[in-house]
Length: 440
Image (cartoon, rainbow, N blue to C red; front, side, top):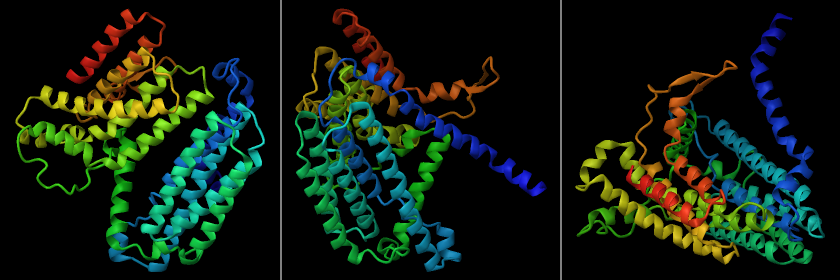
């Protein structure tokens, strides 16, 4: 009895968290009518709006699974206690857990979207497509990445993105979905030959020490960043460029910022997915003001391309190598982020998202929020500023204010723009907030 009581005490916190999570995830299913009223109103969503949600969710999950973030091993165990079968089995279990978790999340999102937006003739074929892509994803994730795997990954991703866009503007024939599902299953069968046994995938047996340690370091950085609330550490690092003399010559500051943008070209894919998500959300949730979609979309699409400035602010010692004022560096970064934002907004316009003047005001506002975010000084954990609320909870107000350095400009500006004020009153406030974000 004593050991049982100790066991129950040890799992009580996890049990409470699990029950809270279940209650939170199931609550929307009991308020479908309420959510439909406040998100759709009297508007009629496209007949295949649920299919657009399914395709977009599966596209995001597909990309996430094929990052292969399960391929890691502790360097100490690799050195002193590396048993190959044990390590390979651990990576295989992580693979299956990662795949199942992500596709269950996509299934949850799809079910909720179907209940909210309604069903149509696409549902059986859409379910078959979901299953086919899920099978192909786990088979490709088990294979050693190569040119064939990379090409197939991008083909499927482009197909899902095109399906998400098409489903918002026209009716997709079920035969197209059945054909795509059959193609995914056939590709999975053809690829399964070189994927290894069930518990010993090829990606685990072929991973070298360098790949395993690199994956472990990325995992440690992610865990520490989440634990300490420092999301800027998750920004993509710079990749190699084939132009060694790109920094040589005049206008070094502009060249430095340009190199920071070009060396993070892999952030283009998430930015494109964000643009497609904005197009889909505007069609399926017509009551959501496009100003919020544009502002938030520009912010998240632009932050990765300003990561070079974030690295200078995170390590102040690097700042000495640029002989310029802080304002010059901020303005150069803002200028290139504006170019990225305009290209992104142009892509959003292709998806029939209306771009009124209020939406255009959100672009400089988001750029100012991006610059203010990446120039945030390192977090001071000695200034947490814990405050006690009336109900006895302790809130780290000082830390929250540090974390809000940047996003608060975007939120306040979007509230002003979307409040219904005349543009003659909202525009000066939004532009002033954008200038404040760049200058401070």
